[in-house]
Amino acid sequence: MTEEGLQDRRLPRHPQGRFAAGQDPLKRGQIVEGAKRVFMRLGFDAASINEVCREAGVSKGTIYVYFENKEDLLGAIVEQEIQRFAFELEITLADREKVEDWLYRFGINFVTHITSPQTINVMRTLIGVNTRMPKLCRRYFHSPANVRSVLEDLIKRHVALGDLVVEDTHLAARQFIELVSGTFVKARLIGDLDDVPSQDELDDVVQSAIWVFMSAYGSPENRPTGQSPDAAL
Image (cartoon, rainbow, N blue to C red; front, side, top):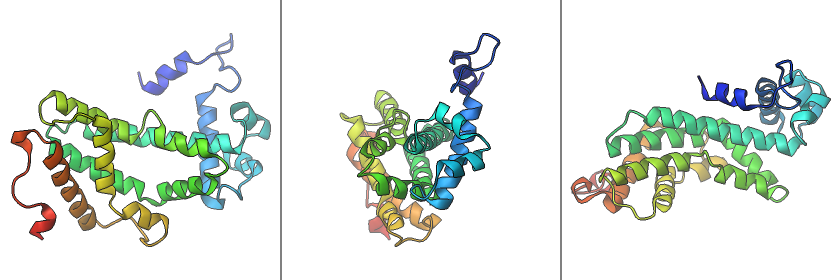
């Protein structure tokens, strides 16, 4: 059974088998997807609940059964995107045993995702509302199911296997994310980079990040020797 199916079984239901008010995951998802399309098209501040109703095909009363307000809807969109990408990463990395292999795959997937138009739009929206809704930004960066937690779990596993020597796995995960991000995210946010970096650009930055990370945290037999990829260019 899928995780969604297990969640459905735990949700409160009406005695006749229907979901209790505000608990139907399909209806909730329908509203979230409609709101996401409206927010991306019009911007968060310009979008109205009425627009979301039309896009999602539900009444205003139905929306307020599931969500308190527009801000609550944005929070649901953010958390859904974080959890979806974290789950996709776990699947992608599941069959990668060699440390350098999953670090490379993580780096490429992470930067491609974080610099995509959809993710950049979400991040710009969060930055725009941060002074009014600081808790929403914290939800984005501290969600239990996020990419940093996926990376940290992998680091812990390879520490246990003896491939890595890391005392603070949380710090190590954050450091690798910063290394692979380079200046790409900032450049995309301010419009200095028009699109997702090219494959060559991604490859250069990720390979260099792996070299630095393994130099710092690789076990003695796994530490790289010779020059870094940058120095070899």
